Image (cartoon, rainbow, N blue to C red):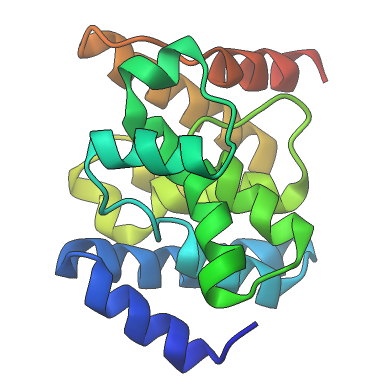
Amino acid sequence: MIAETEIINTLKATLSHERFIHSISTSKTAASYAKMLKADEEKAYIAGLVHDCAKYLPSSELLRQSELAGIAIDSIQRIAPSLLHGSLGAVYAKERFQIDDEEVLSAISWHTTGKAAMTDLEKIIFLADLTEEGRDAEFDDSALIRQTAAHDFDKAMLMAFDGVIRAVLDKGGLLHFSTVEARNGMLLA
């Protein structure tokens, strides 16, 4: 992995100011959740820091670069290419930041939709992305979910999935099947 300062400088140069601040806050929230869950804080911090490293790309470029990278693109992602920024972000993290830890790359890849049988690190990044303090104005339940995570992380995850699903439905959007599978898997566990 390249030096953290190089990663930060690259993110600062490529992301909007708001997205950069979100990434910094997500990394701190992720490290905090990792400490709480007795997971690897450094992995959580790095995954949180770079999780949105491909978020700046327009839809057409997300599709094009995902295809070039060999990422399997499903029918929902073709209609909503922004969902690809996690998978492409994992490719960027590996290529540009020389991050080769598969757990970190998987957490980056799945932070947008979630998936069935998520690892602790995948859960940490998914939840940190939605509940970092800057999200309070965007995501109605972020403060409540953050409070819940302190005593019941899986319940907080379910609340987050419910909130994401409600937000997508309220906008008339398409639900990604991975999100539904992730939520259902949490209920069945």
